[in-house]
View 1 (cartoon, rainbow, N blue to C red):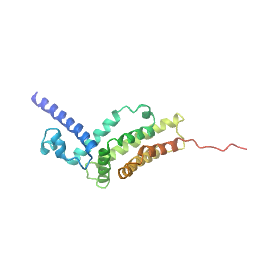
View 2 (view 1 turned 45 degrees about the vertical axis):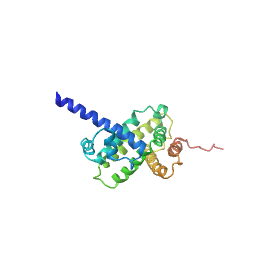
View 3 (view 1 turned 90 degrees about the vertical axis):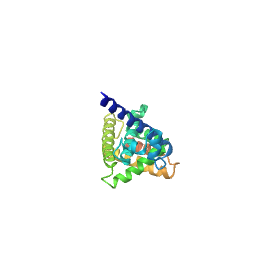
View 4 (view 1 turned 45 degrees about the horizontal axis):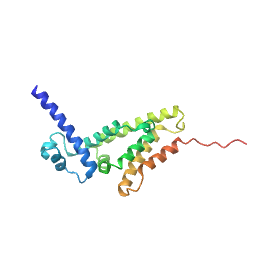
Length: 200
């Protein structure tokens, strides 16, 4: 019984660490948040904190996973019915948590070039899942007549993700760039019906 209680406490502490770390990174920034900052905030030593994770990089990846869980659980209203609007809403929300954008960009660059990096599998799975989910929703829009039928839904999903991620980098250089507007532009171009000239 004591072992079960200890296990539950361990799970609860790990959850606390991720919740606190997510908030710290969002507010302070990725580079300005240290393992010591997180450990102090949850009343642990640095070694004690890392006891709950395989490594420092593993902790960063789990913070990103937690961010995804929080975003998916959020009520995005009518935007959730349109993948383009949904992605734009998330991107617009990201401007409120610049530290998490910094973390995403830093880790995605490191993981893309190193298959051994702890974040590599996270990003590979995330892109595969996101492309699949968006493509499925775009196909539903085509069936409802809300999206041009000549659009390849998987390509559109890939392009929107590329626009979103690319604009995050530009936004870190220049916060006046509106990331969401660029995502919405591409989505509008896909939705717009081709105009056929009237026959004489």
